[in-house]
Length: 161
Image (cartoon, rainbow, N blue to C red; front, side, top):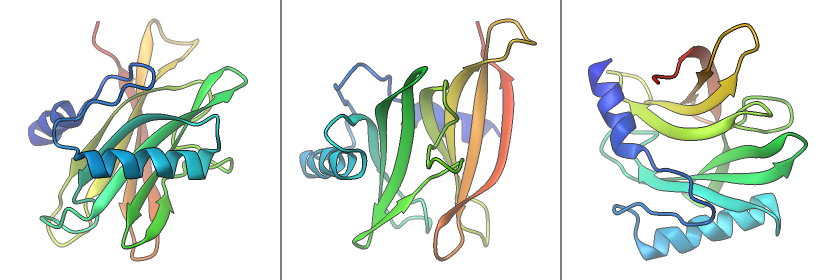
């Protein structure tokens, strides 16, 4: 768990409008991520986060993760996809294709490698739960099953103050 949290912090990228900063992301990858966000989300899509990681096979950094936002009824709705080998694989947690439920705010992603399995890709967002004080962190876990990134779990925990 400690390694997972450290990786989450390393992959964390604050969302500052359309400014995307990731020192490990090449200009070519940034341009590709912007193009993917526009192609998938339309002209109103805003690139929120992009990174190149080994989301399918450990050590093989062939996956470009793209998180983008579109205007929604309660603010921004966040969508995600993994571009690899010329394919676009969505990270969809609901029927509408969102990576996070409506009303959530994107925080960061994390990646955990497990022996003998595809890595676990976690999308984290902030949510408000009326039954609990403050914001909660929602975790949506995806894993590549050979054809798609399927949701394998969801959890929530209090955000640190």
